[in-house]
Length: 475
Ligand code: FE2
Image (cartoon, rainbow, N blue to C red):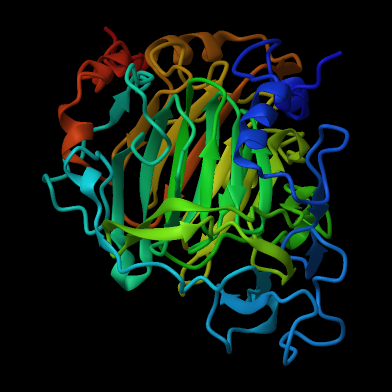
């Protein structure tokens, strides 16, 4: 039987949908020579488990120094380089840094110049001032897959965002739609970490610290500054939350206790893997909202060994342990938080990543879909597959919706009618995976998002059928 990358998405993945045979991706990776690591004999990527653990990994035996981080000379002639993801003096529980042992240090590149492809790029960055932000509820159809050759970098399209990377606050929300692997170039983002939510097709994220294979139903996070290239075996599409603020972490569990929601043991970091390749390469960097590029005469994915807790990671969303009511009423969606990126204000996130996965609905004498609401926080939603329980139609896989601060929203008229009359026996919501990037600041759509043909101008109509049912008003 042929192993597929999507297999690990398990019961989320529909047979054959959005998956690429591992052999195809492996052949892509083999062309690049990305195989000098502790892996792949069996055709499977290897990982280390745990959230923010102190990992230690070496692709060549003896490459990791013993007993210290910065020896006078390393055993295999590697350069020592530390990468910090937090201030040196950040509290121990959230301090992130990794020591790398690499063939050449990161500084060995030519000067950066403005990225030549910027004029055509639909990537945008905070501050988001292209257009005034209307308070309307907004919804978009999926961004079509490109027809021309497009790699991950050129396939980035920004729908909106808030804050400013220069202030290390806020987010940008992007769609990626690509059909080609990154060839001869690498990308890094100094403005924020990137939470990647594949919706169609699998990705191989070949990073400085090793390779992650990510399929729909899984997510990956590439930390600020980590260089990587994205390899694909066909058309791919997904969502990205670029988090300018403090890094994503697991939410506190409070009275839930020591277990539940996303468990730390299910997060996977790569093992060391490297390329020792000279040639003409380019690094594309995102820095203070602009793209820059520089020549480099070798692959920067040349880390032979590393130890530390600042690393890319992936998570299979089917491992999420849902907590929900077993009596009545509708808990707030914070109960579905996978990862949170806090602000200095207690309980108020720069951004939360929240999912609505397959689950049992058992509430008694309760309207079970999300009720009508207006919130302080701002909600961008996407759909990986299936149907979202608050919308009968119009919100389709690959599409998106935005409900900003104090803009009313909730079930459409059809869903309201159905759920108000439904027999309240236990129901299993299956084959569904919606998610939300919920953010403190209003999401300001880009010019593209407001002018594109995929904006559903008729979205408001889904609520127009909600009638006056007030019995006292009827004569
Ligand atoms: Fe909402």
